[in-house]
Amino acid sequence: MPLVFEKEIVYNYSPIHTLACLHRKYPNPFATHVFSVDTIDRSIDPDTGIIRSERLIGIQQGAPKWITRLFHLPPTAYVREVVFIDPSKSSATAMSVNLSLAQYVSCLELITYTPLPSPSIKPQASLPLYPISSEKTKPLSSSALNPEPGFPSSEQEQSTNQTLFSQRAYIFSAFPSRLIARRLEKASVDRFSSNAEVGKKGFEWVLQRGLVSREMR
Image 1 (spheres, helix red, strand yellow):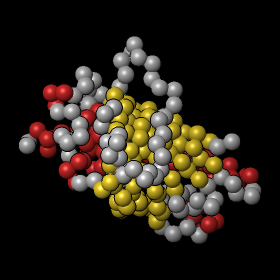
Image 2 (tube, rainbow, N blue to C red):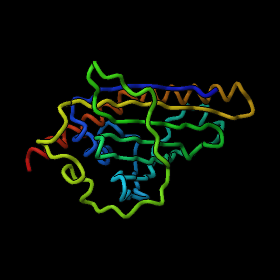
Image 3 (cartoon, rainbow, N blue to C red):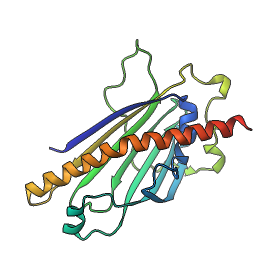
């Protein structure tokens, strides 16, 4: 059974603004472990309007010393991230998986950004999933990621001014030694937990900066 890490955060910014800033999440002064972000593909489904972006994120290893020594790890690691933005629902789903050390431990992370439901509305029981790849795509122009195109205008924005961030990570190790496997899984969960507050501060910095830039237009 994989270990599971779950976290929910409420951002005091509208879903429209949050989604517009999503692809500018890095760099920020709090995510000092992220040293590179390379966009592999970006496209839009002509039927649904869903924007799909695939990126390769390079990070500085934050593994405990015993893991670094045991597996002779390089100082850097890479994560594959696929993000789907659905303008019609003002929501986004992000999926990421580790490429480094994947033969020893797998970390699958699912994140959604959705309008914060009112108390009278029950939240969805599970995170919506989209296929990792799709043939129904076409190249996406850079203008499609601006706050205005593809999203309602500020006058049309939803009544909610808050966005719910829901994170769920599944960590599993198939290492032959169950003792080491469990320690690898626990170290990964601890890493997700320690990064949670840093990630929140970093994205809030990006959101605030984006709001100031938007007001200055």
